[in-house]
Image (cartoon, rainbow, N blue to C red; front, side, top):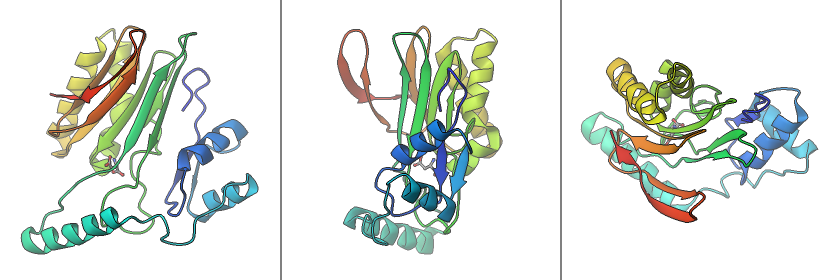
Length: 217
Ligand code: ASP
């Protein structure tokens, strides 16, 4: 999502795509539709020189092992193991314009056709004239509270970014019982906060490159 223009490009329910963000960016640039799902996204990709990999070719051994673990855990406990693999990015350029992008394989053992929070503007991804936000975690919970937009709405009241993120994460947990993490940037600062124990992050700022872990709220 491009915060300067409020333009959105998102693709959903598209397995076998190596670089979904590249396709999403083409959709944003085309400006015709905001979100394409399933075969429509593949078709749009084909029209723009982005080919699908052979079915299943991008599924790694690690992913197969996670699926096996998930099935075993659900059989043993009746509850999902809930482990994600989302990559998000937020940016402010020299001119002060914001952008956000989120890419995910979704949750393990999901139904085919499930659309999570990542491609939904205002839920897992948001950018406007004042901030950029990318979320990870329980997609259904993030969707139910429109997590990213709720942070932006708090910011618009003058609340500091860290407080806006913390309050929105606590609200998500209170309403849904779910868990999430967020990276966010505004005109003054950036934050990485999460309800779950770990969320590796990396950044480039005026000082240079850095990496670490987000802060648990
Ligand atoms: N939020 C993603 C989804 O629900 C999963 C994740 O962040 O790991 O699709």
